[in-house]
Length: 253
Image (cartoon, rainbow, N blue to C red; front, side, top):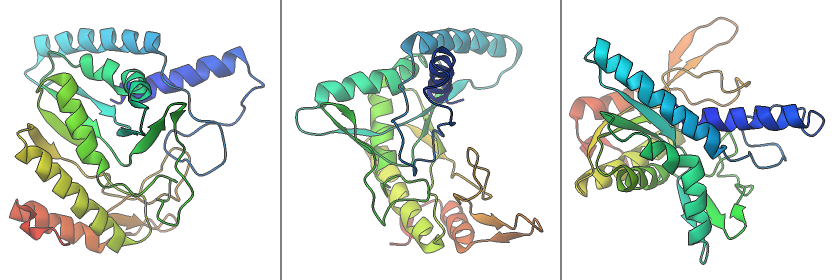
């Protein structure tokens, strides 16, 4: 699961071991609020080893079970500024395409996406400060899932896609409904173009522990951390109505 994120964390560990005084604080791959250096790109050498491990595990699973086999990629949904297409392709390879190509022969490939990032000729642009940003500091980009689906389909050549994560860190549940509704419209548009999307999994059911923090709330159900009381949010009933209808006619605009 998320081999590119695993490779990125292994890359960080290697860098910190080589220069222990350079960076003492853990750099969360999802919480991006504090001023700090950009996360390092995953080392392609580590990624290539993970691809080999994935393929070896796939053959073991297939030999012993009839389970469908695949893995899921944390998609950055890069968009290039004018003149930065080459840099975008370079970054897409180390962050996504190495692992998407590694899914050749799988039964499915997972797509997970929350936001998009601009790429200029120097690299990835940090998310600018904005009141519209999510609780993890990322831009409000419900269109990111459509970007991620189309890019995954173009690289993998038609392997069935399963959306394994999509959601928003927000304390405003009406905003969660708006974001998810727009994201589902982008999913529907991709399906309408002939892309084979088999399913959609929302992140997440319960407000979760997010890489060292309880503060970012992604859940359809809130959790009181003192009493552990769980309270469904309106978004839970809303998404359930969409699922039961099996159609975007239930998606509120």
